[in-house]
Length: 319
Image (cartoon, rainbow, N blue to C red; front, side, top):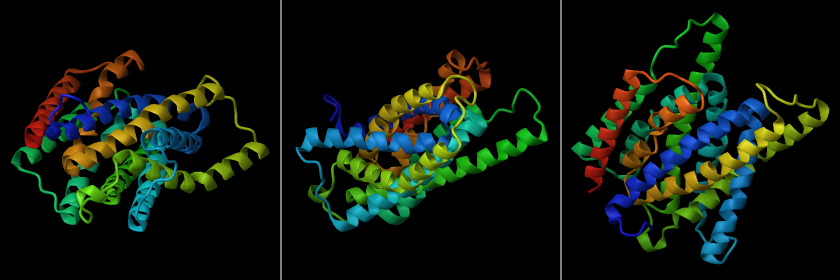
């Protein structure tokens, strides 16, 4: 609970916090994926996040094992497998193939699907300001990153880019379905408020089943490392730095970021929450300049202004 903030605005604020955390996550996991590979990053960060979430649950609730209904367990398990195990593996591979900016853009297609799923399965409805805010925010985000590459690309790079785009769209679809299952797993749409799970508990259960889902991948990575040791680096640096970036990313992303996103889903409609969780392409702009040395164009600035305006309309809708 954020002190001194109206309950109506807590959901949107958690959505904004999620965007900040996922922006930092994109930087960390891009650096890690280029050193140890997307599969290793996906596996290690889920296992680490399970540890952080379990310790937090023990401190907050006094127990290690959450008390939940079987239906909640199955819904959150499906959410973890689809959204975190499969979806994030596709996303991290897209980070490596097409870069974080374009991969983040493709994730902005998730709010539209989420809004439709929320309306169809949970009976959620967005008012006119909500739809206008969503359209303006997504349009601004798309305008920021849908710029042509400065340099022409050969056939190999175009094929690499196309596969990255497909993976980004797969990741967006997995995130949308995972978001719906997460909210249903908390208990929205079929349980009274007093019987619903706390978002932190739901995050732990979801991450636990995602960790179960990556165990076969972990076993495969261990066997591969024994048979053919991986090179020390893919694009510079060492594997040790790759695991360090994975550790940092696991704290801000699958630990704090997933927790904050479930708080947003719990406190406001799926469409509003997912849209506010989709601002990393705009928030990434200063990092693109400072970290990657990219040139920010006037078009990018205009898109950022439009996204901020759309965010303001979503807060009007929440109020």
